[in-house]
Amino acid sequence: MRHIGVSNVMAAQMAQARRIAKIICVQNMYNLAQRNDDALIDSTAAAGIAYVPFFPLGGFSPLQSDALSKTASQLGATPMQVALAWLQRRLPNILLIPGTSSVAHLAQNIATVDLALPDDVLATLDGIGAAAKH
Ligand SMILES: NC(=O)c1ccc[n+]([C@@H]2O[C@H](COP(=O)([O-])OP(=O)(O)OC[C@H]3O[C@@H](n4cnc5c(N)ncnc54)[C@H](OP(=O)(O)O)[C@@H]3O)[C@@H](O)[C@H]2O)c1
Image (cartoon, rainbow, N blue to C red):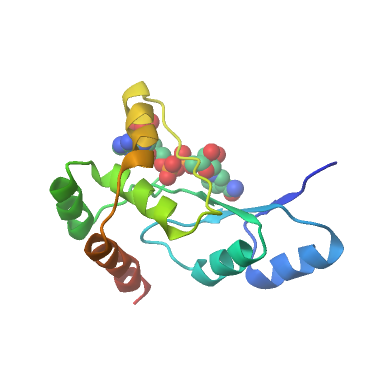
């Protein structure tokens, strides 16, 4: 076994795993509205460990937010594209695995590499996660 990744781990479990072996990636639930792993993402980035958010678009409960829809229409993008662009701006160690059964959605998702999010838009999007925590 050359590389080990872990999934569905809390920070304490991650620390425990790293005492046993070199961990190269973590796969946990994380998206614009589900931000419980903010601190874990920061620590994996600092340690050079990849973070792979599962349910990046909300999974079985697709992301829905008025602020997200409004921001998307301002940018000429779809809400899901903005949600993926936000993840790519969050930190460079985040690797995306959005699931799709649609070639059109696949093309939209790939195009998010070029979707720039101005700072004021980022602040609005950050507010969605903050509101969801309360
Ligand atoms: N480690 C774990 O415990 C764990 C748990 C759950 C999931 N995962 C993994 O995480 C990855 C992502 O999970 P997921 O696919 O369930 O959730 P997801 O990526 O959050 O959401 C997928 C849903 O979003 C829709 N979608 C994708 N692109 C879209 C677009 N551009 N516009 C509108 N809708 C779009 C898809 O519908 P369409 O098909 O119509 O595009 C599908 O219903 C998968 O590889 C999965 O195996 C891991």
